Amino acid sequence: MSKESIKSALKQATVTKFLEIETHILNDIPQIFKEQFPGKKAIVIADPNTYRVAGKKVHEALKNAGLEGVEPYILDDPNLYADYIFVEKIRDYLKDKEVTPIAVGSGVINDLTKRASSELKRPYMCVATAASMDGYSSAGASITNKGAKITHACEAPKVLVADIDVIAAAPPLMTASGYADLYAKVVSGADWILAAELADPNHPKKGIEPMTGAWNIVQDGLTEALQDPSGAKNGNPKAIELLTEGLMLGGFAMQSMESWGAGVSRPASGSEHQFSHLWDMEHHTFKGEMAKKFGLYPNQDEQAPSHGFKVGIGTLAITALYEVFLKESIDRLDVEAAVEKWPTLESQLKEIDEMFAGTEIHPFAVAQTTDKYVTKEELREQLNKIKKSWPQLKVKLRNQVIPFEETKKRLAAVGAPVEPEEIGITRKRLKDSFYRAHKIRSRYTILDFAYRSGYFDQWIEELFGEKGVLKGK
Image (tube, rainbow, N blue to C red; front, top):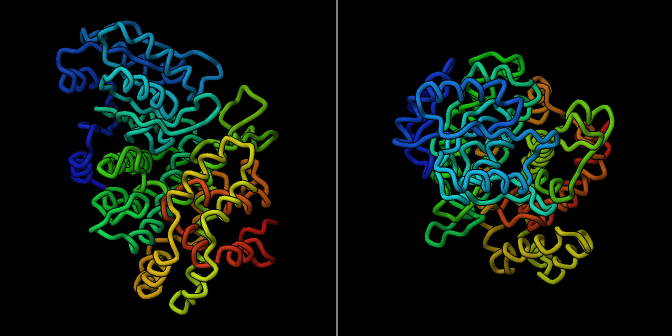
């Protein structure tokens, strides 16, 4: 990666106008703020930990430069998480104050401030404190509202600053979570390659998007950003810098896709994220020794795994599925047999009734599955396209997907969980999750090809069978 790649990404971003990733940069924040928010005064928003590691220094530098609007707003709830009640607290505190928010923190602080600022129609700035996820620069915030965790559309930060010294000193598990989230771009990239094969540039369709410049923003530096998991775990400045850049670029790529509609995350999210979204919607938590190691809330007995750790297990699952897919002779697929067996929308909705009856997931799955349903004629056309292009498509996918064992080795090296049980997911639940995750997103992925071609049951049984890589110990 280089300064040029960041400049290029910023040109394609729709909201973020400035990104700086450097060492010892906190003292430069007053000058950056003055240039990017001329005539404005600032307020620091943090929690006790992020205020200690960076917020206090940012606040004092702003105060000394005459840029402090009001005293910092510290969210000191011991069970602070991304819940809408905290968005309301920030919004209500800020609404009668003429100040520009500076979120000092990582996922939770940034998402809460992002949403509150967006509701107030105010641009804001973020000072990152950990390389823990790719949401810093995205135009969305993952927030729980009345028990349901959903991504709320909102404006990305206008300005992003990341001090490598601060981020390198973050808890290693936060770095591991961010690394796993970035690693997911390998298989989400494969899903986009697959979907783009079906895209019609003359009739663009959300969920089956053609390749855009967003691909290069994410993928061009991905190999380099993932090359040193042990270095990232140990806080090596270069490894941390590359990881941080990769995570930031993912958000810029999503910003560049806004012409496709609000919240289009195709460049950074695929079938692997559907596992994480599913487990979020199922309100998954776990207990015990693994929960103490990989959980989010050290003060609670009941733990939730981090987003990155759920995505990491999803990445391993989808990597395994791609390996089975790439062994198949798709160029000999019996298209007419697959079309003949294609279930009607009514029968697919009955599947959803059986899976999700009585849950808050049910209406969402119905809407998403209805949205992506294709007729037999459309299915025939899709399958023939992939069958015809399979020799070339297979090469593209092989070049994109990193083998399962290497993926597992790298995630373990950074300190991320590599077995589903480590985040409280049994093998049976993981197997069921392939079927359930397929129903909750209209975006075209390998799960859709498996279902539409008739291979789904066969491939899942192979993965969890006697010689399958997901069968467990």
